[in-house]
Image (cartoon, rainbow, N blue to C red; front, side, top):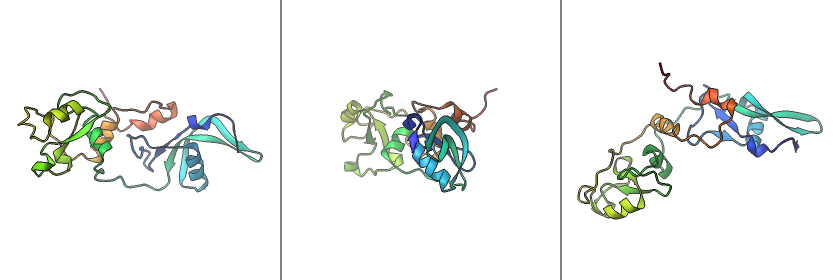
Length: 186
């Protein structure tokens, strides 16, 4: 196939069968190749298209900008306990000093050396200086208090947190599907 324009600039927003994004952060996007493959395998409906197209000698197709799955995928009930989800829960900020940091670490409130577990309820994000200052002590013994108590987030909590960090590029055809379940302001 020859390509009319740069297709890397044309990802497709992937919606569940209920027209909600599969995820907000990271935003559920497919490459144009994956979107076209899913169309040909009859797994998705094309909701919106770009003006750009791909073509071959006998076929031309506009690139999908929004697709919806034909079969509903049940969202996870409990988010995975990952470094990324932990940072997302804590808003990518140090929970001790409040600094937004690109190179965050995570800190055990009850250090592992004192029997602390690696769980949602015992880990918070911390910048390196705060993490080093606290060291292997309890936060109160180091004279430090987290800005908020750690908790087990729901998928909904992480979706809401992810809305605060939109990707660098949001195509206009996606806007009707991204935040439609947010509360309306009077």
